[in-house]
Image (cartoon, rainbow over all chains, first blue to last red):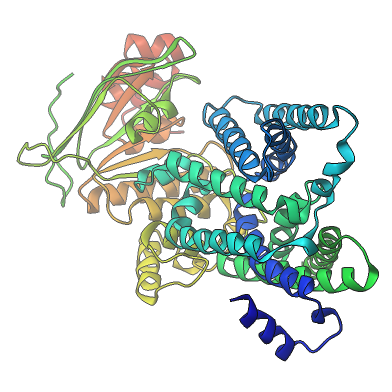
Length: 280
Length: 263
């Protein structure tokens, strides 16, 4: 599989940056992850869940810490488990409609960051884990890519099957209910998808910036789109273009890839914002 | 409370019936609703009135099954047979959404009517069905507009069209309290009235406007945690329970001079 990809890149992209296999891997990762973030971002922004996904990202620190305490080689499983528990806790707080969901998310988020730092910094060894903060896309392996591909396929399938229901729920729960949508399950599945995708991508994109990758493309697209089809198409396109551009720029500048991608999407955001202002 | 209903609108059989039995909702240890019983016949518009915090919107949500409650919703068709889950249409009081949200009227309809994900493509048949639905409330010109660009009245009509596509057995309306002027409200009530005459459905309307209720509804149910009084508008407005809550003005102002109803 990977050989096929390498040959394809050599054939299609005869550039300096594309000669290294770590760049080829990273490019494939970008092509898998960015559309997903563009897709999920549309509803994260529509549902005003940006703060939620941010909290999920931050909770990864505690997940890593738990993994370390359990002596795991790769803390991905403990990260996933912790973020899923946190996502369920937050979404049940949401459905109980406690009026200050924001505060609750803030408390969960900062507590788990602090807890993670305390555990990981015991004995002064926190620097080992700083790659999780900024991410390292260039170290992605073909095994990791296989996992990403599976997640990619599953999310696309779910997005086909449940999007209309999710959308109606986000417009108005009672209205969705009257159209026989099981709003509780729909919301929970969406929350879980966001938690899983964010957590899996953290080691490549970094805790500090992962949320911007979710919010910026959708936010940019919103500035220009007037229906759901345009919203999705633009969001995915902006996410993918920023990802590829960011990867190439980071190669030549020697900067962290995740952060460079975020800067490119931020440029898109401000450009579209100005375009929207001019149009009105 | 079993009063006679003399005439039915043209196209409704008037025989199917919705029974709301013993609905009770407890929230935070407090009774929000208690022992709510209401029978509604199709072709009838029942207005649900009551003071703020009386539980009107909660009752609608309980009927929708969104809120846990102790009661039962029974729907009987014209043969008096229990026909299981009635189809419910719902018009929310207000949509809380970002004005910039890239959602078109067509998006909203297709998401409710079709299994094809709206972010991918839309079926041409569904599109023409949506146009027909919108025509019923004279809003087909709004089909490609963004929800955020509609006026309060336009949005309400679009939501009404959505709630009757497909035609439900029971239609629940939560009257808008803001964003619509008096004339818009009158148009809204007229449209609902027309629907009642043309389709076979029971309508429950949460309302705050006593004069419009008097003009358009067949029955009024006064709710304050439970149903205090139920009957024709004139009866309820002159009931002791109503006067205790709202004073005598309404009964006198609306019904004493037999000619016109309002000022």
